[in-house]
Length: 251
Image (cartoon, rainbow, N blue to C red; front, side, top):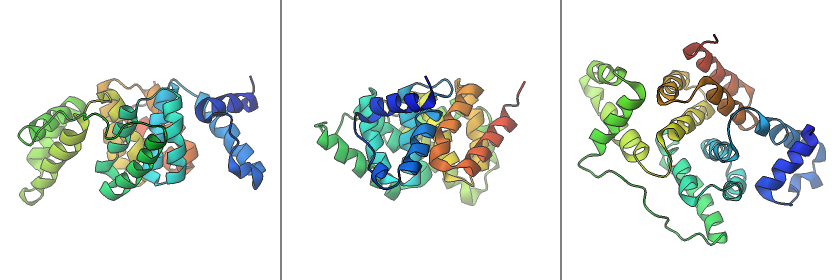
């Protein structure tokens, strides 16, 4: 099957039989887009459709490309992702892009859910409380990154220690401990989120190592970043790939 047929088949699976509105005004551009995203990128590597849509959701959220996000929420449902998985992927963005942008994305998700008669709010995935969020978050950090977390906390100046506490209790305690997505998926999505932001190469390298530690191999990481390419462009994609190659060299 050539990439034209592949793109038509993939587009139909994700979005149904509709035709993108851009075909009416910019057919050449839409042809390039469709054949590249749905005829090439979507067939590259070892990720399934559900994993690809989760990545697409977090990348579009990080980019704040909200009309496209709305379309991909529907596509995510079409390929079998649950409302919980979709919400958890978007929630996972909050520590990296902030609350306002995450709320923008949540509003788009909720509009699609309402149109699809998904009952809101969906079931809670919370597993921590005020008494244990720090300890459980720190435990997840250590599971992902190892002893470097202890050394990092010990070396942090006293007037900045609160940032390390927030990292443990908020980023990892409030979000990584939630149900709906497993640890490997959350860590893979985090890599895609921070790669999308650009200028975060130090954190990208850390999360490449974190992904490796939780069982996401290099092929999976390269496939995930490749999937980000049409949405974030070559510069940020190549920067992320350079980080992957630095931390996990080719044999």
